Length: 467
Image 1 (cartoon, rainbow, N blue to C red):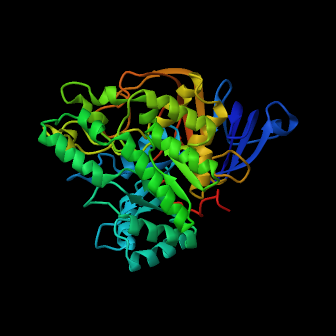
Image 2 (spheres, rainbow, N blue to C red):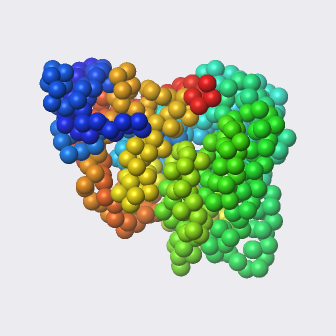
């Protein structure tokens, strides 16, 4: 769609600046910015004007960790690419990077093709892919080079889930060595899955079957140990490392130490670790199953250390790890055995609002909000400044955000295809009003005006922190 739009009178917030400016959009891109009220801004003409007086004008969120339609534990994540990307748009996120899965015994290409088929023509917003590498061998190592060349520049490995996604240290080292050569970035699920499986078996043998034991067996020390080991393997390989969904203060300490040594090591956390805790896992009547994810929720005292890590830049990104399973019929698979509860929480719609609440609560600044939710994930995964900022030439992925609006989070009103909210009843200040994806209104004054198929696949360059 061509045509011009001007957004007038808002406070434009990026990772680096806050300025009262009018924004001119043309042919799906940001064409110009000019300080509100100046002759340059007055000269902007457009077919459509959006009044953003009293509102924030921010880049669309970049959620670099989602799992739409993921097969897990005999079932599938309940959001499709269609429902999941629509919900993301409602929450002010305009780009997701989802995980294509290589199954053991199959090629990376087969996995990637399968995910392209799931997503193509179904997404409301733009999307890219990371590649889960479950089977490291000579063929898959060669394929990694080809994937980097075509814009899939990050590869996830698991130190957890033996028998499913698990890679041993030798496989991890080989993949890291390859990424050191081809410019790819290894993303690590850092938990000692071999040791955790022993603790799971022992807990079940003692009759400890409730959801809260999921958190107790997946010990913080085993997250820290795996994080340390991943860092050392990356150091041996001369490769960068991105540790996903960091939940434990002991793991943050490992990342901080590595970064203090000047290593190219990065860390991501998620809203669930910042706002929820083992108190939720312990909710009675199997309600705790709603909060089962891996890495698990931690005791409340970990939250302060995660916020601190976000302020000191020992953690750089907040993604959701959105992987929803309905309570009815899916989470319930684990009644009587916590190890059979599908791992994952819904959150793609809540991230931008929860992080704005963190601004209101004084945990982070407005610019840091945009940095950890938009700009850094775009840079980390090779999409900046096309995504993650508001600057001439960038895609016109823009959110008009009302910082004063109040909302109560609820499954009754959310748009994710799941029968509960992890944040049910939580009061938040701030709400998305209008969302543009490449200049096209996807949410218009709290109405969905987008459509499946608007979102396009976005190839990525390599991590922009390593150049």
